[in-house]
Amino acid sequence: GSTGIVGSLAALSGTAQANWAVNMSPGVTEVSRSVFDLHMTIFLICVVIGVVVFGVMFWSMLRHRRSPDRAPAQFHESTTVEILWTIVPFVILVLMAIPATRTLIDIYDTSESDVDIQVTGYQWKWHYKYLGEDVEFFSNLATPREQIDNRAAKDAHYLLEVDEPLVVPVGAKVRFLVTAADVIHSWWVPALAVKKDAIPGFVNEAWTRIEEPGIYRGQCTELCGKDHGFMPVVVEAKTPEDYAAWLAARKAAAQAEKALGDKEWSLDELMARGEQVYERACAACHMPTGAGMPPVFPALKGSAIATGAPAGHIAIVVDGKPGTAMAAFGKQLSAVDLAAVITYERNAWGNAVGDRVTPQD
Ligand code: CUA
Image (cartoon, rainbow, N blue to C red; front, top):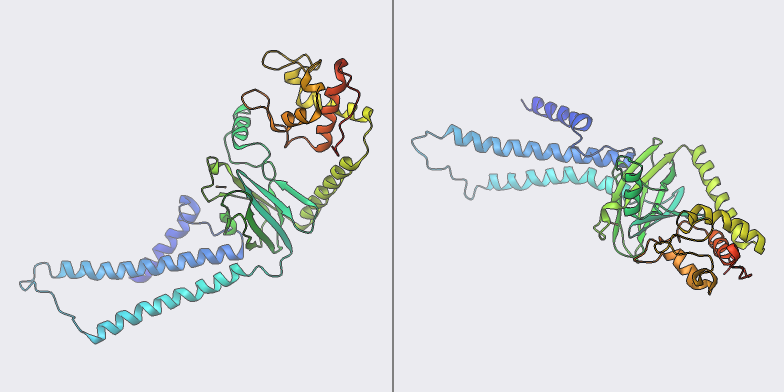
């Protein structure tokens, strides 16, 4: 009977969710669950229509397959049938449209948000800016290829991961203002049922209210270039207390960074800091003595790169040098660290230019 079929389908969808993972996810928000319920309702309606239509078709084919009189019955110009097959689909469509419209209105209502976050797509990473707070960062500093190499070096099982997840509080209405800086991307986290195109020059809005702390993963879902497949999204939902602590720490770090950048640095202070930066970032290739390992890693001691006009040296450190082993350090060095290491290389190992490069430069 029909209850048997509906029962089996309901059981099937439950099993699919639990074991087969072929169905969509019910997610972790009220909206994501209503999208899931909508999907299941419309799926069941379609299955019932399919069963009825094909049932009648196969029944009449089998029932009449040996009839001596094979001439088909004629319904031509039957007013009753035409009214029925107009009204029945109309009623079914209205029944589907009511919950769908309700869900859509809910999805589009981004008003009265508690937290506003600007999400900007870049080739190939995300930038998050907490509006009204002094907090912003990129999801990834390493390029996709570097991330893969890092993971291979660590012999870790490859998993799309980010350096900095987007952190949000549970229970709060979080509004996303989604845009892009270069080409069209799309920010998608299935567990939240949020998928918004990120388009340069446009701001699209979405929102979520996550109920459970946890880590929710997604990806860029608009083909955006060769590394489109390496634009993961990781959302970390924290309790309101943990979120507040995280936000305070990020703000303090941003202010400390800004204070360092504004500070008036003496030559000695820059040299001391620069030595640390040099040992961390440069010494492995250019040697602690600045002697390098020619010809692959040039000497900095006595070199024109280190002692010449700072602008050229800064450009090489920030952007790297294509075609050589010199990587770009622009994203991993703060303005202070950059100024310090340039100053250090100008004055270490007897280079003794005697001037300093400051963060303000
Ligand atoms: Cu960004 Cu695909």
